[in-house]
Amino acid sequence: MAETFRLKIIAPTGIFFDDDIERIVIRGTEGEFAVLAEHTPLTTSVAIGTFNIIFGDKKSKSGTLLGGVATINPRETIILTDAAEWPEEIDLKRAQEAKERALQRLKDDKYDAARAQAALERAIARINSKEGL
Image 1: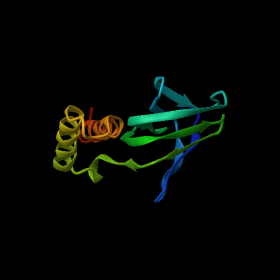
Image 2: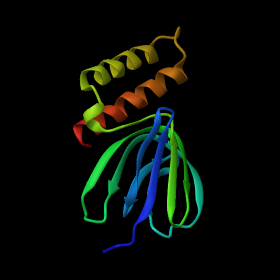
Image 3: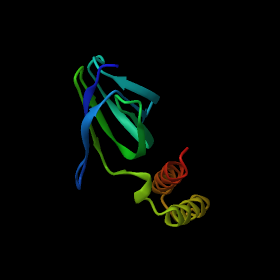
């Protein structure tokens, strides 16, 4: 059995996840990466996207992180995020509608393109999480 470490995911609404795990794969601003026990200390940005937690019994659980920062240490990783969601908490129809709205706003000069792009990324992350991608 592989070594485990503590993972805490904290959102503005409170502690989203707090347990011992074997590995987490998250999307950073420089690409996807995995964290295992005894990882070299690191602080990095977390991008909007899905994550996958692997427990010691080889079970896994995926969800969505909507940006943030991760502080990684050998025995503990803490992710502070703007929001975190499990797939069962996501309303797929609402996410698809948000994606369409964002795409339309990106075509229209009267909207802030950066905000529309961020909304599009959030909607796509939610859709991917819900659909298990």
